[in-house]
Length: 486
Image (cartoon, rainbow, N blue to C red; front, side, top):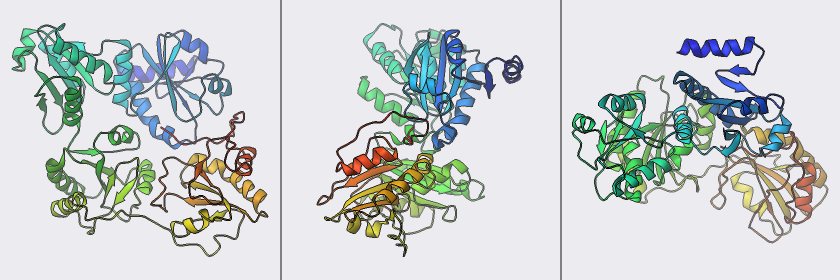
């Protein structure tokens, strides 16, 4: 089947039709309407070539295309370079990258699924078929279990019963998991199931977990999250959103090099402790050898020279980070790190760069954590601060515009234009969630006003001169920097 996948890719290119890259159709302003109109189901990614999140999604998107092709699915995957195909970007109101839309019989709906191949396929299949596959034989059931990493099966002799309805409603609302339902007596016998049983099958840790307790939507949702979550997960940029959106807000992250022969030893030590804290904390590993994880490591304030190294994060919305007192990675040191954290014995870890000697010599001042408050909260000055990340594509695009803004205000004694590398400097009072984030601190106030207007020279200048009140949007162009988002 994979050979067929490659042949179809090459054949389409040779015919001069819509180009395929790794099984994904490359659409343009000229080919989009015909392609969408001739197919029932198409998922379209609007991307920017320089976007970091788009680069992370690319291999997963291609893998999803291959999975669908091998399954002979009627769903196809396509992509549009929104920086080049301006008419399409404007028509579908693309303001961030990547933006994904699912076209069902030509009508678009927002894509709300995951960013890994399996999650993409599950979300798409649920949009065109039943939320739970009707399993009519042991062979059907085994095939479904074998084909998926995680499968939840409900055993209901009467699929119109109240309990079956709860199960099916959950299957319909959960876009990240595969569900099956059966009334077949042979399937019941094969898995020693009783009427009303719900089993979660998985290819890791405990291979089968049974739901117990009162069956209602809340209890079933909690069971699915807990039972499907591995003791230790390997996280990537693509899978991070799902993992870190859990109801559990405490995370231990072990950054290691998988090429190190001791890496499996570190993971086993982590796994041994994770068993005791599964209901309170999520344990994950990050491979420092993977290039795309560099941004992740910068966020965690760790370098390749530090590994193996641990961090605890409390609630990714608040970005509170904790560092162990010992650099040792053993079951004993991990256990102490976690116990000290939950006992309140650790202080939040905040970073600051050294203050450069020439920090205030140019049109754009350089701030670090140690001098931020004295500059930004100066009651005699209006201060504009850009919080940026060195790896952020949008930050790089806005840099010359921001420098121009600094030049414009450099002779005004009561205005300061400044920037701070938010990956190397942290503030107790300010959490930055996206890059670039621009805040205006007016005279006499320590409350920053977040700039949400047009990121052009004119738009930023109007914002400052209005005292932070003018957030008007200008007409967007392909050169107008936006914001990195998933």
